[in-house]
Image 1 (cartoon, helix red, strand yellow):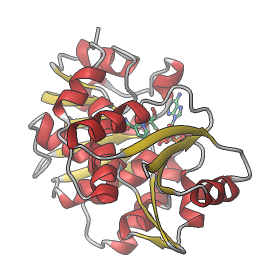
Image 2 (cartoon, helix red, strand yellow):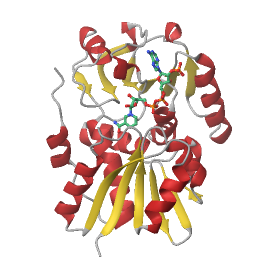
Image 3 (cartoon, protein in one colour):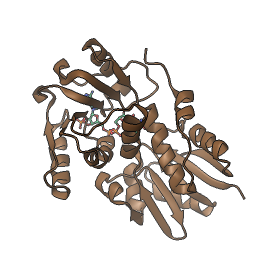
Image 4 (cartoon, helix red, strand yellow):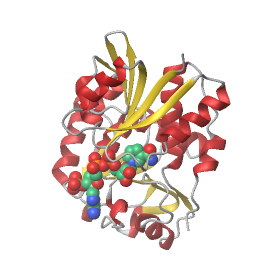
Length: 275
Ligand code: NDP
């Protein structure tokens, strides 16, 4: 029987995950089907139970269910615990294993695909939401010189920094508001959802150091206001989140199937030019 997987979210019609996993399955010869499920707000656990009963072996989880998925996991990884959010589930009898591959997928895209090291670098993250929560541990593992989180609501960034510092004392981590972003950074990540509304966080252009990488986590939107700002500031290394999307999918695929898919051709197929 063909093994069944799915991505669950609401809305879900925009998702690229079925295409990505189908390409991975074809390339690795895995007998599996991967579909998109429209989740029911307030009934996430029931939706998961129905999929498991129908023989489902694993799920990806997207907005707005990542926190519900963490709540229904019986065995979240440390990474998922740190993020307090989950983007992949694996079912094994009564066990619901859970992980969060967003941060590790992004780190792999930056260091492996784009060839940009974070070690000893000054790193700035804009936003302190779910995506940022998943990024912090994998980024700290790369040993940056400093890692600053700038957020519109300063208290959210500060409480996230305090949470991480309690678990990883001595981390080179700080929080600030946009007006207090001082000095240039070697890597700047836009992990706000501002681009989804074509808005721009009030970031000073001095945030971009010469030779900087500007990375927009949203994908498929061409030159977002953030990437335009970076370009106007003279940044030549621009990227969007398509590589992150495909790399987190590859992590989940390997976790489920025990086979590592090659990501480069899939990223190439999904890439929208940054114009
Ligand atoms: P959340 O809703 O959890 O967090 C949103 C963040 O954006 C908050 O920090 C919020 O600040 C900030 N924000 C929203 N609007 C504005 C604005 N106009 N100006 C300044 N700050 C703003 O979102 P996620 O963390 O889940 O997602 C963030 C981004 O990452 C999205 O673009 C999403 O598409 C992308 N993403 C991409 C993935 C990929 O695979 N490529 C995977 C996951 C996410 P405040 O706290 O003040 O409200």
